[in-house]
Amino acid sequence: MLFALITAPHAVANPTKKIRLAAPIFPPYIFQTNNKWDGVGYHTVNKILNNANITYEIIPVGNYGKALDALIKGKVDGFFPATQNPVRDQHAQFSQPILINRWVWYMPNSEQLTPDMAEFKQQRFVSTPFKSNTHVWLSTHGYKVKGTLEIDNLPNMLLKKRLDAVLISQLVFETSAKNHKIPMHNFKQIVHSEKGFGIYLSKATLKNKPELLKRINQSIVELDNNH
Image (cartoon, rainbow, N blue to C red; front, top):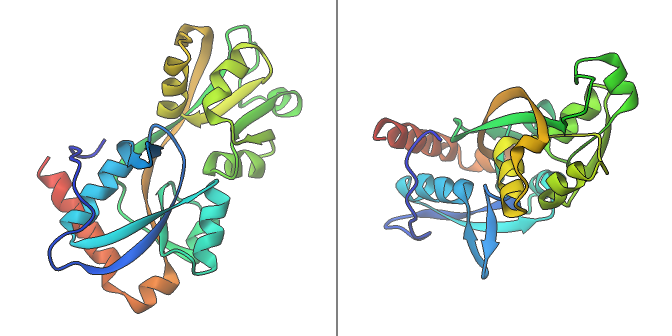
């Protein structure tokens, strides 16, 4: 995490016009409890936007594909928490990173192949959150991929060998495993990469509000420096 997290109200003094941000349910980064938003990603963005005097509304969406589609259609001004990819870059601009997202491979301990082997790509089915950046990466790199919306059930499905492997955010998988009381020693783990989580803002929105991304990035830097 790049700076301390503090819960703050959405409305602030002298705010700019409210912006709409789509967010998929992606615990523990962002989720709802009793109709209230929660999670490390939510609290981080909430603090950033409040510090920048920007009011906002969160629009829940089913997955990252729907978040991007809503942005393209002008239904939202942006979405979060997101990692960067070329398709998203065509339609939106990426903020400074707000959190670090570590992608990790999870496999049964009995697995003899590694993800970089041709045999692994040919013989193993990999599950990952549907339409997420890991889904895009797996698809474009020749893996047999099964996108899923049952993110919280992935550790249990892998433990029961209903899946061959999972590529996912480390915090997401390990939080789900902990919730299901599944010890992590049941899985072989290989770190894939570390990527910055940020906020995507629509290029159409920024055309009308060119200062918006600058204000958000300034807020990120200020809060990071004060940490």
